[in-house]
Image 1 (cartoon, rainbow, N blue to C red):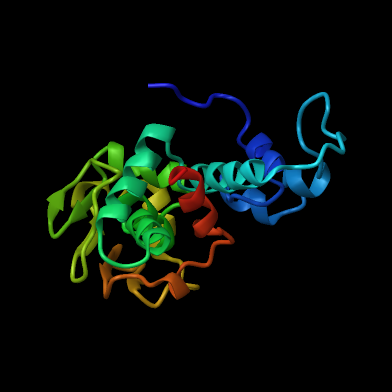
Image 2: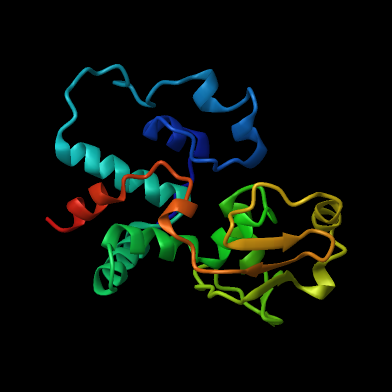
Length: 207
């Protein structure tokens, strides 16, 4: 599988918005977008007019990079959303939010989605007391998500226990002291605080 191996901050500069790929660094003065708010590459200052297709493409790339997906994976979510009842763009974002790696990121277990994906891959996370090591696992309302019992003494989790849960979406709850959270309900579009214009992605794929 093709994998992006260059600097994550370069992606934020390319999309001209914070994608929060580097955890705490994105909130501080070391953020690359704050220090150097220019599109990367030799011709960053080009004044060439962006076409409608170009705007749609950038919106799709931004969403892909926020959730850390490759094109084939992202396209699959669009196709599933298109087959589902309701608004395709909203369906797609809800499915992306229900990914296990995104859910534990939203709960505050990790500083970034990539870190949370690694936690899942390494078998640190259980869903309803069963280990799940697939980051794309779709959670459902009522699912209980925890750190595996024999991993709770790792320094990062000991530190997490002493923190207070904050800025949680209303569809999730998390108890740091127990390293356990719960999916209270299915997320809605209003719960997704990302500046993504999903209708542009739908327009791009439906051509």
